[in-house]
Image 1 (tube, helix red, strand yellow):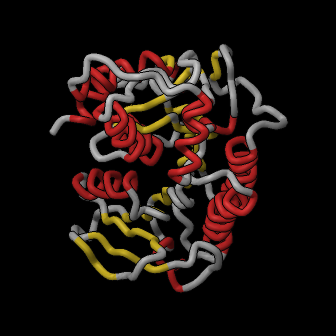
Image 2: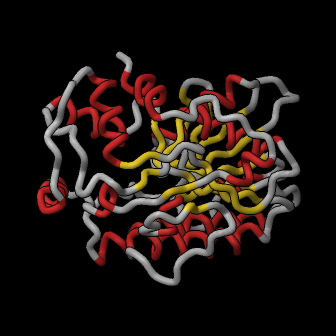
Length: 310
């Protein structure tokens, strides 16, 4: 590793997004350290350091003198919205975020910036409202969405106070090669179930993987970026439009629609959450557009064609 390279720490970076981000940033000549609940060690030139995601430990040394910390930690959301699961979704995000802030407060050379990858789901069901950064977060909403995300952002606010600069990225559904959401939709379409889900009019805020990675890299590099940004394509689509694009991407001309009662039945059997496909938000990345960010993949057709290419 070049001794002049920057160290960037990815907390919870062993998942789909973390692996892609680590590969991109390492390819730019950065030293990458992944904080993971799995065993530590070096893999593919990337250091993996064990942490429990809750308490400050030896892993804090990896943050000392780092250029940036990118927080990706949190249990996957595709679970039944039981009280226990919602509590675990919240705990996995809040505890890990607070632990990062506590660790940084004890360092002589704190990292330059905290980049928190969060979610547009904090807005719950948005209806027809165009949701940019100026739209206030609702006081209530689905507990597995608004409730979890609000507690998460409260923890971020506390952790951010330990950093000289902090950026919160509220992301739409990520679409890219290997992403779980696209793989599930493509599976449904290949089974002939690629029609509209529920009413089909709900808005889908989405972002291409490469665009999200570019925004994260920009947040690390650009000292002018601070505060909350919506990271979602400037061209949100309705669910029916998205499913039509999925069918074309996998070569299916038609697909049976999935009425809401069947969505509840199917997600219950699969251990998932019906609110994920049935709840909609019409997100808009006002701050990124105003600051000149150019989305390389703003249309859903191109994003899904890329994500499903064999």
